[in-house]
Length: 534
Image 1 (tube, rainbow, N blue to C red):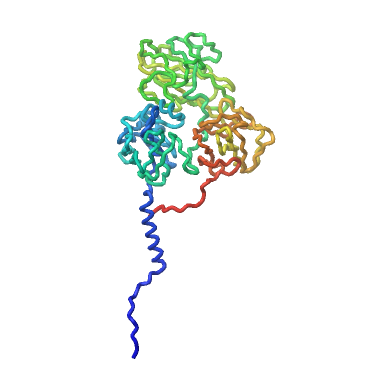
Image 2 (spheres, rainbow, N blue to C red; image 1 turned 90 degrees about the horizontal axis):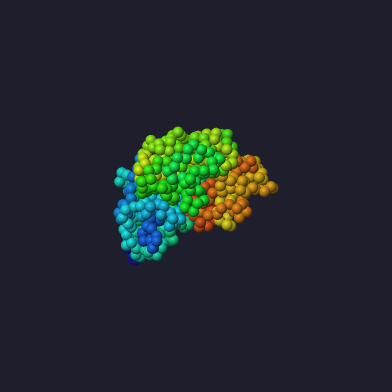
């Protein structure tokens, strides 16, 4: 006899790969349930002030997350607040593009008022006012292109789990993570408002190139500058535009007079490009029967005149003609021989920025003090609006032998210079300045040499450069006139520096950890694992 072995149940043994796949599937499902959906947005709302405190204004910051410009002509913001972006016919074509990595502002008031309340520089574009308002209790906000395709949409709330501080306590909703769909409370936080600037939530972020295009020109006169002007409906004759003019006619308001707040000058009820009307002129529609307004501006140029080129951009209603040191430069809507009662040959409905209305050689330019003069002509003596603003830029031969590599424009900040060449460069006698009209403000002392691919940093305190949100630096060769490199940018004063990554490259970033006299590199360069596609 033998004893039969019991029949045992059989089990299918799982292979190791099958067990691993099961674990991965469970992990993947958990991640899907716990993680906001990955986004496909290229344009996002990056800051929203829906319930401002007393004295504040509602606004939405729109950001381009890509290196590709977007045509935003006739795009529409809808739901509670409504706004339609201007079309191409309303101004220069470039104004209808959202630039690479650019932030723009949509708001409930006119741009000039908004800039004054939130201290927003002219380099950041502001659009408004919109119609309607954002709900204090939460709602959906949508931005669609001119074809109706939704470019960005999200719904915010004023109760938990959404941040509560933006509901009247003075904070904005801030997009803390743009790598996920923004229609999720988990990617939003709150912070004091910084319209046009990022809140430093990450180690670094891309920044539009601040380099001044020396081939286009450096601005020596800008839209917000103060001018001498005469708005008293007088015939000033033919000598008022000469350098030796002594202001012998009555009616001049001088550059430093208390009631002269700079450009734009005029009177206008419609929205205008920044900075808007800052100094009102005597209104021709009030019965004064004006045709011509006169302007003079002195500026200093220290540089070569041979090979120099002059460009003038303008914001004008209706016509204008410019003179440099008494020599005619050109204009639009009027001519050099126009009398003081000669009307403009064009009618402007709403003034917009007109680029390069004049491009001329520098034959009338002198090394030293120069006088730019302008006469603005109305289309008729009872015109209801008049606007004047001008930007004069001068381009001259340059030699980019050294580059501005990183700046931190604070009292304890620095300017860092990079040598991209294969030979050492003696820095003795080179100049740093914050003004194109005075390129020799600070001279680097003798004994400083920068090696090939090397760095040299100098403090703001030593150079005397202006500190603040407008980082303006000109690096000029020892001759005091040849600009090697220049930057001009509005940056947030939050402790971050602005620099190239890597050294000498054309890619610019804001760095949360400034790297004075050290290579510019990410402080968060460690590898991180992300599920990017499934």
